[in-house]
Image (cartoon, rainbow, N blue to C red; front, side, top):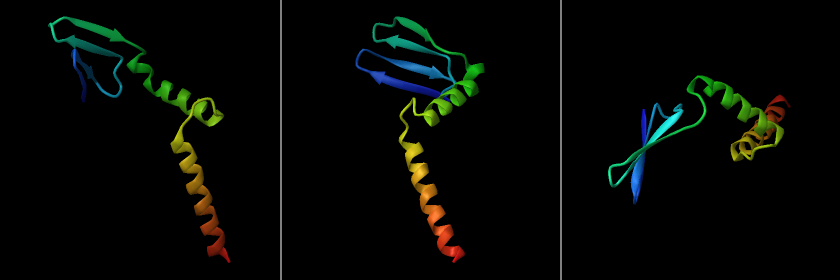
Length: 83
């Protein structure tokens, strides 16, 4: 997969999206730059690290709150069915 983000002064291409570790910036005048961050080989480790931080409350994540709410609703339904 390739991700492309367009701006007024050029665009960015991200190959191997969403596991990319580099992206190319192409400016309207034809000049190019590469930016690099992280390592594709470490992608799963990054995701696990972020999940742990989210669970500890170090990173905000609305979907974690929604998951908690759904679990509470399902627990309530289960208790009703068991009666």
